[in-house]
Image 1 (cartoon, rainbow, N blue to C red):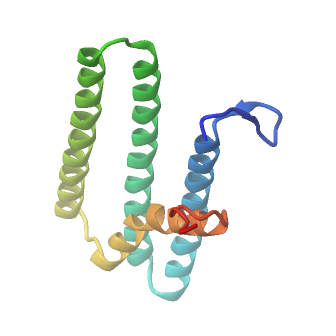
Image 2 (image 1 turned 120 degrees about the vertical axis):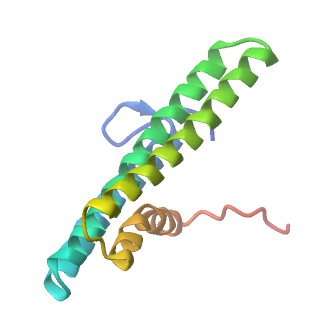
Amino acid sequence: MNKEYKASNGNSAQPGSTLVRRVMIGSLVLLIVLVACSWCIYSWSFAQSVLLGGLLVNCSFWLLRMDAQRLMQRLGQTEGNVASGFEKTRFFLRCYARLAVLGLLLFVLASQMTINVIGLILGLTTVMFSVVIIGLSTGKCWLPSKA
């Protein structure tokens, strides 16, 4: 899985990076579809909550992707357990800090404007749904076989 291969555009890329890119594009497409459907079927305030949740989770996922790439690059450059342990700790601290900032941002936005909780949760699940859809569409079995 660590082998490089030629992507469809001719550039060499890691297999995981194309999957992550597909998840991000799928999540944004799903977000657009959900916002449009919720605006037509329900109301603009519901669609606005879906959009808010979707944008927050997509931005957080994008930042997580950037941090993971930075971690892998730095782990490849460092030699020794102390430096790699420091990089891993730094990665986890950044993840928890991002989660805390996301929670504070949701709190501030909920106190300043009317947010439909169901719409917000629907928007926050767009990345999860796209991961499941992309994972099922690849057709690979991720579990070890019994043979």
